Length: 154
Ligand code: SF4
Image 1 (cartoon, rainbow, N blue to C red):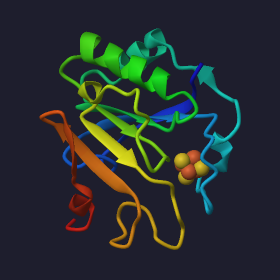
Image 2 (image 1 turned 120 degrees about the horizontal axis):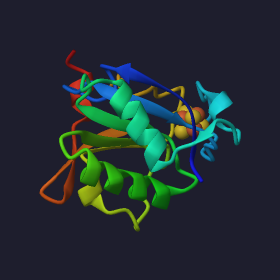
Image 3 (image 1 turned 30 degrees about the vertical axis):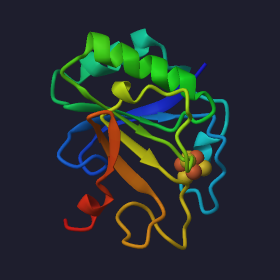
């Protein structure tokens, strides 16, 4: 089961969105230069649908998006939680920050509005670096559209 350590309302991770970012643990990616190695272990609380609902309710409608940060160990659970968001919180956009280079083929794109792909490589930098290997995609019309450049014009 996916677990999470903490959450925060953030403004920079997804362009034009106020996102509830939930930091998932058990990360298997082991990126060189990882800024959050405390997310590698099997720690935190289970991210059930109920836990997700409670965190959203605590935001009192101030958010426009829910962003799951990590969770690459069990992508099918990401898919299931996103499906839950689509059904129960249909006004909220959904985002996933994955540390993998490729999307797991079993994921249903219809459950996602944004997907970030790519491991963190310190010599290339994160999304705000023009040299980054990471990519943020907006999903519409059943396809992923690269919007990484939105981070470079701020
Ligand atoms: S995806 Fe990479 S940078 Fe993010 S927590 Fe996992 S190892 Fe660290």
